[in-house]
Image (cartoon, rainbow, N blue to C red; front, side, top):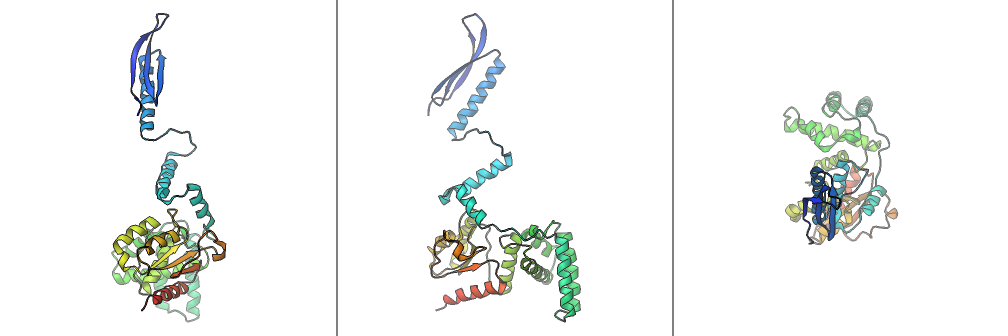
Length: 313
């Protein structure tokens, strides 16, 4: 690497006037600049030393309209997709192509009121009991207080778990609350107040599968799934994944990496787009199944059961 050192010294020019000179080399280019005061020269040298460090670290200074937080987020995204061999633009285009917004941002308080009214109508039809409706009203009216969010789509798994656990809830109380919220989330999903990619719906899917007797491991991204695979891979029989994951990896790329280690692994890929609209994805191989979202919970369970039955000798 070329010499990047700098110095400041007093200098007398041809007119007999003293000034302060910054002397050195930056990336092989000779630097020689004069200043009236030592302070100005010292400031210039400090700036040149920073540039030299940036060059040595493969960093560069740029002018941007992004805030500091946005720049840091962009750097984090670049690091996450570095191993995928694709550009950031291609990952963004793929994510936007599969992004779905809820039909409306339903305020949580209004959604709760609509759900209670729906269950009251079920009581009138003798589909549920009065004691059950009383418990449901109590839990649903408590939800907006324990989860103070603007809309249903802002519910997160962490908030829901905190709601299930508050007051040092017993296992029975925890499960009762989870059952009530599972019904509420299903109600919200049917009315498109939630989309399948949102955290609350992922939590609902996990809870529903567990209620059907399946043991479920949940990962937030493709990389998280691969880390989890290192510890639990031998016991995993089926992968349920979206076509587009949060870290830019596709569900098929994740499935291919995991099936390279276990060919018997069954895979369910889901997407809000029809299978015919995803020509940029390869055809699904044996052991794969495609489900278009939204799909009914019973449809998902039937697909899981069908693929797992294929593994039986």
